[in-house]
View 1 (cartoon, rainbow, N blue to C red):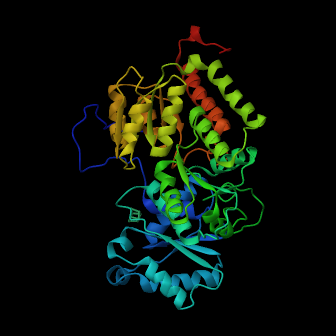
View 2: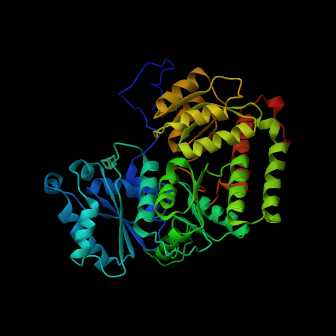
View 3: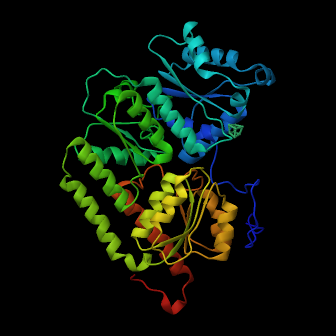
Length: 459
Ligand code: SF4
């Protein structure tokens, strides 16, 4: 694997060039979010190539077929606009595939042309191309700004903008916006809410959609995901918890300003402290007390952290990924007494570096942080200051191989391993799994590389 052997340790200033980006494009996040609505077909308003790429990126990560429509732009639509294509597409989709919802997102091309999606959707309704009882929501997702996380956030905002209603009577439920996490993470967040006795509306909810069982029968729209009625009810909720500033805050704040549903934005509940904050905030919001079952899960995690502390202690870690994920992961690593020293995110955002600096303030080591950074820079930093562990998506495997570092795959995309869609990393159970993965990675390397006389059976 000579792919990255060109990486030099010497870092030269580079402004107009990204090498091996630590992000992907907006519509991928919008498509993923849309799949978390029951009976929803995502629709890509652009060329077939974009749609094929987005679908295949999601399929390769989730190992499930991902369906989506496309406006199939030609040279003509690129010049004159895609209105006719979208009108025709909506008519065909509702007639042939019968979804309850079509979630339209734009692409670089339709954004550059300046297609007015709300106007086109209104026209489709006027012309009877959207059958009664069916819905079209939309999000603008130009990929030359932001990342897949921005696209996810835009589509989640599109959900509440398209569906939320206010009857004037609170329904006692709490909106939970889980952030750009795996289907298993969404299920774990629901599990924690249920254990607390909190009635929640989780959206989007891809659990059971992209990690469902093999039944022998293909269903284009699995019986899973948040329902349209639940999304409508989000406007009557007693509060919203948005998990992750980058992926969830927009929608949470929209519900707050338009429907007077008070919101709190928390970090993703990855690791001990962030999960504690999530459980505590949810408990307070719903007026519940923490049940013994959750205390038990927490206690198991604390036990593992203390039992295995000597293996975590002062191990240096490099991380690349999405800002919401990385902030919580860094906090957890610091809790474990590890040293996150090289940190890159490809997604823009002003508060990221300040949060990381805050979390790593007590580390007696230089901490490199780059927002809108790339994997090439991460690799250069690693060459200058080697690390014991790399946490990254599958693209990190080239760096891991070149530098002989254990790699934990985390984030999006994971193309070469299974498990991420079935086993959570959020909550206390998720943190236990993270501990297991970190330990396995560190100890496997030790077992394979230590001198023969130091090989231990009992560790
Ligand atoms: S970056 Fe733009 S042109 Fe490329 S696949 Fe994404 S939406 Fe399409």
